[in-house]
Length: 417
Image (tube, helix red, strand yellow):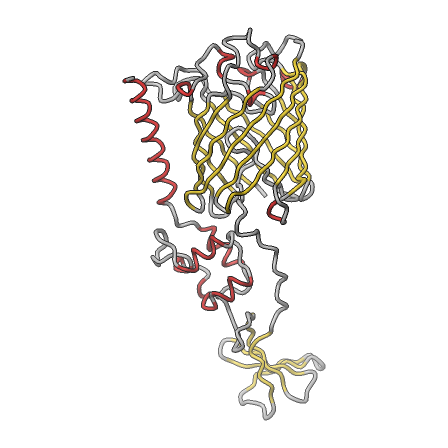
């Protein structure tokens, strides 16, 4: 009981520390980059932190525009411009314009007046001449601005739709669509080997680590491909996969559905191949929360700790995962999931202690303001992160796979372009 209390205190301290770090760092240059890149933003405000924050130096509480900017999904929409005309260039009629110091000579189809550095010049396009103007012409039509064609408003996500920022929850996949031409990194780190009840081990942080790394690339807005590799302690598998976004809540569908098929081979894709089929169903409860259901079929599956150089017969494993994510702040989410193998053969009762319980995990995630980067601090009793291995617990390693056997880890994702 004493060790359990000590671990709970450590866990609480870690979560509080992580939360304080991620919520106090509010001044993000991505806000200004998005605002400054908009053609309707006021030039004099493009370098001012006061655009989004109450404090002119940045950080701390956000002002009304900053809060509305977040609620709009970090996008400058026509409605946002109308709501905050003090942040965007407008003409007398209230329309957003890009102002130019130009006037035209009435009755002439070849002369225009341009003002530069306090001086005015007459440009004649017919004679291709330029001369400085000292007095005002008798007849001019003052045109102090040119109205550009208003951009076509992009379809904004429905206000009750959750927007994930990572390709995975903890181990389970989300149904986040991968945009065409975008490249995402997928990096996971697990510490599954030490006894997490060791008061000096900090949930296995002192143990051997399992780092895995991969990429995901969007071929179209619906179809993506990817590759992923895990280290030798779980068989050195290399995973190649392809996925399709069949349904998307952000485009008005009732649910999001991502279907993926992957082939992973042990010993750097040389033998012991496993083919997996998975379907990630996601449904938003509100724009702050989403639930997931992920069934997976793995054909030719093998225990996670089997010798990668041996050609072993495979089993067909059926797994069912469920999970949820809840935003407690616009860029901070709490996550939880469970993933269990449904058939006895896929639980390998004769290997180690067997897979007696579901893989469970929970964590806290921090996303950047641009939503192109996310860091997740995780706790789970499963060492694997590939399609077939993510449903195998530490019991395969003769380790505790109960809730007391949770070990620490983290996920990193980044959109490179």
